[in-house]
Image 1: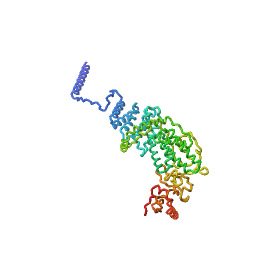
Image 2: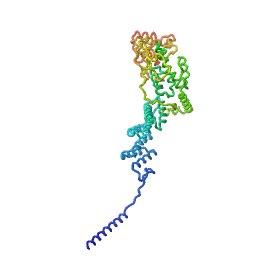
Image 3: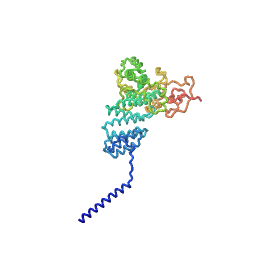
Image 4: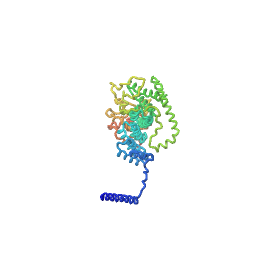
Amino acid sequence: MNTRNLLIALLGVALAGSVGIGVYGQSHVKVTKVKPDTKAPANAAPSAEPDKILYDRATDDLKHGRYTEARLTLQTLINSYPDSEYLAKAKLAVGDSYYKEGGVSNITQAIAEYKDFITFFPFLDEAAYAQMQVAMAHYRMMEKADRDSTQAQEAEDEFQAFLLKYPQSPLESQAEQRLRDVQEVVAEGEFRIARYYYVKQDYRASAARIVEVTERYPLYSQSDEALWMLSSIYMRAKQVSKNEDDKNHWADLAAKCYDRIARDYPLSKFAPEARSRLKEMGMAVPPPDPNAVARMQKQQEQDNKHHQLALLKLPLGLIKTNPDVSSAARSGKPTLNPPDDMVSATEVLKPGAAGPSFTLAVGGAGSTGGGGAGGEAVQMDSVPSSSENDSTTGPGVQAIATADDPSASGTSPAGAASSGPPNPNTPATNTAPADTNAPATEAVQNGTNPPTTTNAPPGDNKQSPDAKKDDKADPKTESTSKKKKGLKKLIPW
C-alpha cells in the first residue's frame, strides 16, 4: 500500500513539472511571422513538387528578363533532380535564356546549348525547335554580302539540315523563307566577286564564280544577269577559237544560258535579247515556265513596295550591320543540296569544258570532246585582244587564246611562259605574255616615241639587252602588267 502511494506521488510531481515547463516556455517564446517568397510564382500550389517550383520560378524570371537568375535556378533543377520530368524543358530554357539576352558571346553559347539538347533528346518534339534556333542564331550574326560570309554559310547549312530532318514541322515555311534570305546574301557575295573579275577581264575566274551562282542559287535576284555575263564570256571564247569544234562547243554553252534566261526568267530585261540570239543561232526558243512567271511577278510586286522606301534604306544601310534581304525571293523551293567543289578557274574555259550542269533540250555538236590538234585539251590563257585583228570585241576586251599560239606573245616561247593561272579567290594580277597586236600608246598614235622607264613592277619577265632595245623602238611589246596597272601613261623626261 505504501508503494502504491509512492508511485502516485511521483506521477503527480512529474505532471506538475511538465505543466510548469509548458507554461514557462509559452511565456518566453517569441512568435515570428515567416514572409512568403517573393520570387515564387503566384500560381504555384502549396503541395507542388520542388522541381516544379524551381521550373516555374525560372520561367517567371525569363518572362521578366532576369536571365542570370533564371539560369541559376535552371542549373539547380538540372543538378538536383536529374530524373525530373522538367529536365528537358530546363535544358532548352537555358539555351533560350542565352538567345534572348543577345550578344555575340551569349548567342554562341546558345548554339552550344541547343546542340546539346539535340544530342541528349533527339526524339522529342522540341528537337525541331532547337534546330531552328541554332539556324536562327547564325542568322542573327550574319553580316552583309561584301563582308565575312562564315555565319551566312553556317546558317545555310543549319536551315538545310532543319528542312531535311523535320519536313513535317510547323516551322517549315518559316525555315524556307529564312533559307531563301540566306542564299540571297551568299549568292550576292559570290556574284560581286564574279562581277569584279569580269570588269578586270579575268574571265576564267569570273566564269568559275558565275557557274557556281547560277547552278546553286536559281532563286537569286540577279541570276538572269549572271547568266547573261556567262553567255558573253562563252561568246568571246568562240570568237577567238581557231577550231570549228571549239567554236561549236562555246556556242552550245552560250545557247544553254540563253535558253535558261528565256525559260526560267521570262520577265527579265535580258529575256528578249536571249530569244533573239537563239533564233539567230537556229535553235528553238523555249516557252516561259508558268511557275517562273508567277514567281517573278510576285517578286516585282515585292520590289515595288520596297522601292518606295529606297530613300530610307540608303542611310539605314550605313548604320545597320545586318544584310538587306528585301530582294530575296518569296516563293520557290530553296536549294537543299550541299555545295559541290568549287569550279576551278583553270578548267572552266579549257576546250571541251563541261560548262553549267543545267539541262538544255537542244543539243549541239562539239558538246563533248573538243580541243586543239590531236584532241588534247590545251589550257587557254587570258590576254587583251587586238582592235586591229578583232573588230567585234574592240580594244581593251580580253580574248582567249591557246598557249601554243605564236600570235599571242611578242617574245620567244621561252620568255612567254605563263606564271600560272590566277587564284579565283583573290584579285589576279595579269601575268599574261605581251601582246604584239595590242594598240599602241598615245605617244605612238601622235607620232612621237615614248620615253623609256625603269620602274617595272617586280615579276616582269627578264629580257636580254637586245630585247630591251627593241622595246624602246617598238612600244607594242610593253608588258601587259604595265598596261593593266596604268603604267603605260609615262611621264616625259
